[in-house]
Amino acid sequence: MKRLIKNRPLRILTRIIIGLILFLALLILFIRSPWGQGIIVSRAVSYLSKQTGTEVNIDKLFLTFSGNLSLRGLYVEDLNRDTLVYSHELEVSVALIPLIKGKEINVKKVEWDGLKARVHRSAANKDFNYQFLIDAFASSDTTTTVEEPSSSPEIKIGGIYLSAF
Picture 1 (cartoon, helix red, strand yellow):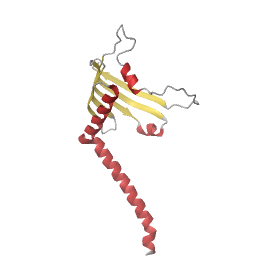
Picture 2 (cartoon, rainbow, N blue to C red; picture 1 turned 90 degrees about the vertical axis):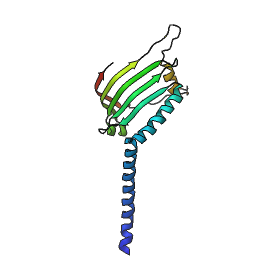
Picture 3 (cartoon, rainbow, N blue to C red; picture 1 turned 180 degrees about the horizontal axis):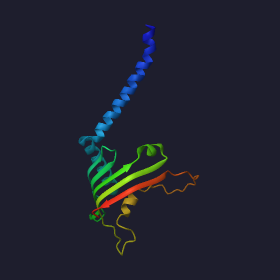
Picture 4 (cartoon, rainbow, N blue to C red; picture 1 turned 45 degrees about the horizontal axis):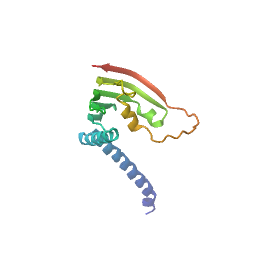
């Protein structure tokens, strides 16, 4: 009976660890599955369209087997319902451990295929046609606060490969 009591905390700890591993495995399977990616993309597109008031479309957003983030078929309209940005494919490789630790942002590689951007400013308007994007995600808080200087994470960028521009 005493031996059973001694092993009980160990069994509970083992079950917790197995539960966490199982949860992480299911989360990865969800993110990697077409069904999970569809849910993530539809929610992201819905949020971006609502924030900007324009049409935003993403054909596919997924994590590759190597851990890269891949975005295919990004389309963003401007306020005149004209194409602001269309990107055929963008793949970004980011080192996750330094990013999680907050020490640095290490973009190892960027591969961008087929970017078309129509950026312009009319003579009557002082703003560019992408100003609505800046306004949509800008903070509404206009108060200024004096902050102590803090160390920003170091940004490292590796190779950038562009094609079909």
